[in-house]
Amino acid sequence: MVLNIIDFIKSQRYKQELEVANDKSNYLLKGREQLISTVSHDLKSPIAAISGYGEILAKTDLNEKQSYYISNIIKSSEYLNNLANDLAALTLIEAGKIKLEKSPFSLNQLLIDTAQNIQSIYPNKPIQLIYDLEEELEYNITTDPYRVRQIVTNLIGNAFKFTSEGSITIGSKIESNELVSFYVKDTGIGIKSENLDAVFKEFTQADSTIEKRFGGTGLGLTISAKIAKILGGSISLESEYGSGSCFTVYIGYNGITEIVKQSEKEIKLEATKKALKAMIVDDDEQIITLLKEILMREGIEVYDYNSVAQLINEVKVVNPDFIFTDIQMPEQTGFDLVAQIKNNTATQHIPVIALTGNTDADNNKYQQAGFNALLSKPFSINSITDTINKLLNQPDLFIVNNKHIDARPSAYNLSSIAAFLNNDQQLIKEFLEKSKMNNDVYLDDLNMFYQKKDKAAIKAMSHKMASVFKQMEHKEIISLLKTIEQENKAKELGKLIQQLKIEIDNFYKEVLKKMG
Image (tube, rainbow, N blue to C red; front, side, top):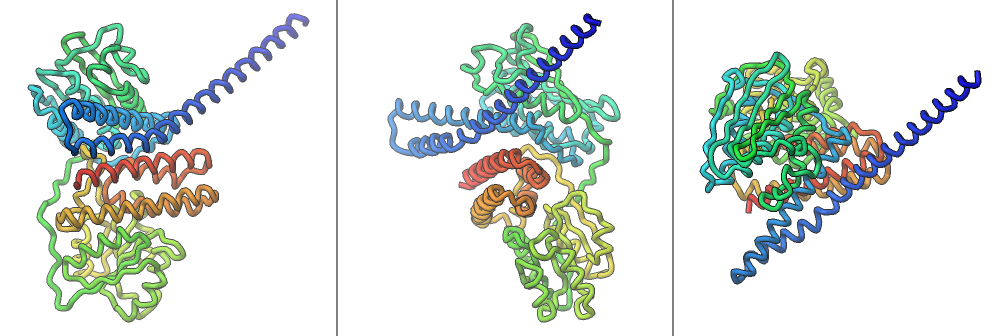
């Protein structure tokens, strides 16, 4: 009996000690996460100042020694910026905030595009690109193309960095009905056998001299391995010191589908006996601007509004040939608008086209509500003109023109914006500058709603902000906005909004710098 009591007391003591240790471990992990998030955010402003002033100084009259100093300052600021970005990405992954955005894409094309883009950065390196790609993977697989591209960019970037001459071989293979693989093999410096496990650890280089010779944060492979795991796979490594390395990545996927190659021929609006008129309602000025550009290009007279009430007040006077409406707007939604249009005998004949940012929209729900067509953001010129042509010929049709976005080597894609603006670089730059100003205001509003703990307003603003970034196909920002829209914990919301500001600031800084 006494022995049983002693055993019970020991068991309870061990249990309490384990609980204390677990609580301490969780406290340290949360503290580490918060520290990394804060540091990565707080680094951004001084880095921007250092690199900005460095670039200004580089354009002044400098002697050889001064130019050398400035060059080192700029390179160091780039290193710090990469470190801050890697820290921010690591924080998101470890906090479980990475959301997968699955869509069909060609893995082979993604590998080729990424390799060629990175090769252009190293024009003086005599390195041959060799492809060993499984033919069937020219067709589409379905997983998250943006996350796959993150891994591919890191591995191919490392291969070029650590290879002075020789070749880089990139291959792909179907492992099973649920798993595909790709590999990156180089003839570079290789890794010593005793250091193979270390390369996937945070802030670790395979060799203490690597950072001095080649740069890098020691986080790229850590992030890649974690993303591979999120994608239902893993990364393996084989290497021979002095001869090169081979990284193989396994990722889960859903099915293989043939790529439907759409004609690149521009769809023109069919000739009509009368001049056409369109009404647009959206609370986002950027989307209105894009739609107006494409419709006015086709000679359509456009009336635009920021609220459903404004449009309804003028719809009988304007008597448009069709109406474009956003779905989620303050006060009244697109569903409220279509109900008022279709329940009035004077306007029920007017086709109403829904514009939605929801990739999983229920087609039946929109058709039953009275919509004549459903277009998913981001939309293309061809999808809009094709929809109008069909509605003019058969106004009773219900048209769904969803557009799937393939992976691209860039984190964003401005081709649809450029098409809307006739590839006029000045107009594109003006659009981006206006977009930046709008999003600066939106971010201030988002912070204000967060301080007021107004979750409904945060959700509405996040949805609103997503529209233009879907048009520019910026997966990372779209994913963050979607997470913010769904997040309920105040503490996590604060971190996510902070991260969103970093991503948006970086995006506009990069794209406007490229525009000149």
